[in-house]
Length: 190
Image (tube, rainbow, N blue to C red; front, side, top):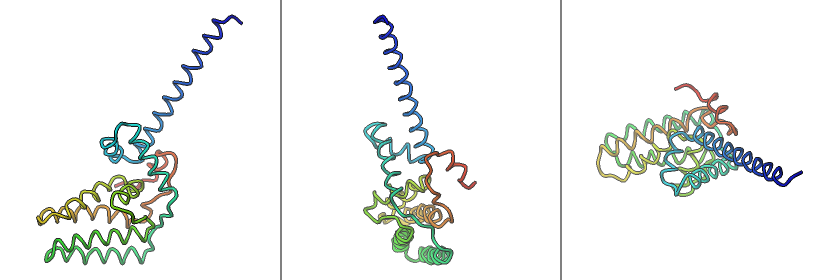
């Protein structure tokens, strides 16, 4: 075969390989966007580029796959729901303490579910895989909790409540599939 034919074949192989690689990157991006929703955008905004942000999200998924996250028993869910009612009732007389209790209760539920209780940022990253649409509430509640302002304390409670409710939901942590379309089909209508 003449040399120019081999050159054309080599160029064609490079083009096809490039297209396959670009397609794989696009599928990975769509998969991560589908799994993480608004957390995808938040992570990429804070990363030094798309590659680093997507690597962070992929590492979270891999770490989550290694954890033994469990559903709560019905009795535990009922007990924690009652505990939340007491925390919420306490807010009127002692807002700061109620917010601290809410944070502690969330951590207790997370611990019982099987989430590691490393530092706050690691907890947020771990929770973001299963609860990507409410993890920002957890961060906002944490930020507001330190404020002396009663309105900030009230907003912290509202943010904490969103994550708390999600953590208590039966089946909130579906098994992780490799296909976000499968996960979307399992997502309950809200």
